Length: 507
Ligand SMILES: [Zn+2]
Image 1 (tube, helix red, strand yellow):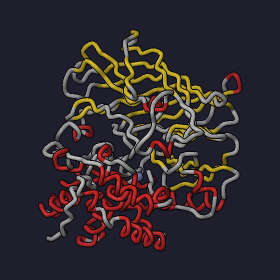
Image 2 (tube, rainbow, N blue to C red):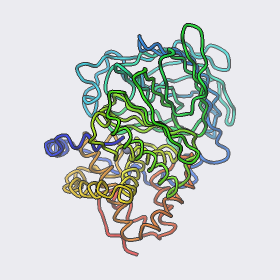
Image 3 (cartoon, rainbow, N blue to C red):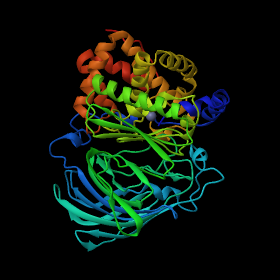
Image 4 (cartoon, rainbow, N blue to C red):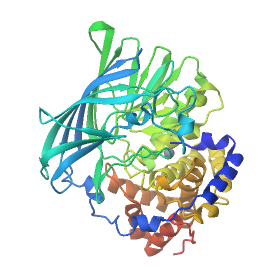
């Protein structure tokens, strides 16, 4: 997610309110307690990228009713027990259920998503089959629990979920407006099992509270023939069905989620090739064409740059799509742009670059975005500025200037035990989250870069990428990559910043 556009609106007033809120809040835990001794290499989280790990296969057939804003479909899942022991349950995240009628979505960030014009949505699982036999299941908030009859270590099971979804009307990740239905976090995805057991965090309002492993997705979507779609994958040629529907099929491996946007005929597209990847920018005929072109260029350039500097982008397509979401948001192979970016020539290309950076940090190298949100956000923020300083120097300089202001006074949060390295549920508002996780996190990386030089920094981030591509990395994994090369000072440096102490880096 990109916080720049939110911050500009009344930042100083917000900062004062945040300060007051934070002073009134009391937090006890801290980063070192959360992570102490649990994130060593070779633990179950790191083993996610090991050879024994067999990715889950998702195969879904969905029909979209664009009038009713509903999705009806079937999801078949082939899941292998990678947990290292027998299990009697499996869990899936069903995030659309957060927006069901009666849920009190106040506090945190929800007010920005759910305004007075909002309408609820829902997700109903109507049947679950386990190896072809109808089974029990229970949905608790945004988590689906399916009991199993002893699921042995290494054994594969075949599940089938029949579902219907009503898309809510709001400004969030899973919503619709007059021209678009944008579906972020819609498809049920398997919860991660790590050293804590099954991780079934709630849908927090702050941050992008997701945690998943890579899987293989095959999705067949039917929409009316005057609609188009963009997805995490690359769609094959559309096939005409009965009743004036078109079906698109896409299949993609090594992605940790599958997002999708359904667009009416008002949408236009700019397409170009970057290496083996087709980059598409989708915008409305009523949008500024100039803004669309500038965003498209920034998307292409940053994809090529990050591919060259940090590691190759291996997917066939990258979609940049205008939606009605209030901010920009990253998904594997697909990013949402908010409408304000494309409505005028005052482009905010930093958002496109930030979400493109997430294709490396979050998408290809995964992390627990609830427990350690800094790992993808600070890296996305730092690498965005790194790119901007070279390709759009004025924007890059402005980002550094903003960073300087936004990291002033953050000691007040730290006095309350809220640090760069804190989990999302420690943050009570978007201001402290943005200032610490994004800005101060990026400053931590920039200050290190000043000491060790750009080349060394790039080399270490390449090593990190290589080691954890398609896996899940923890803070400790990241720090290990740096301290292996730079010595124990690097460990001390990161741990101090992550817990609010900010030492100099000395070699
Ligand atoms: Zn982000």
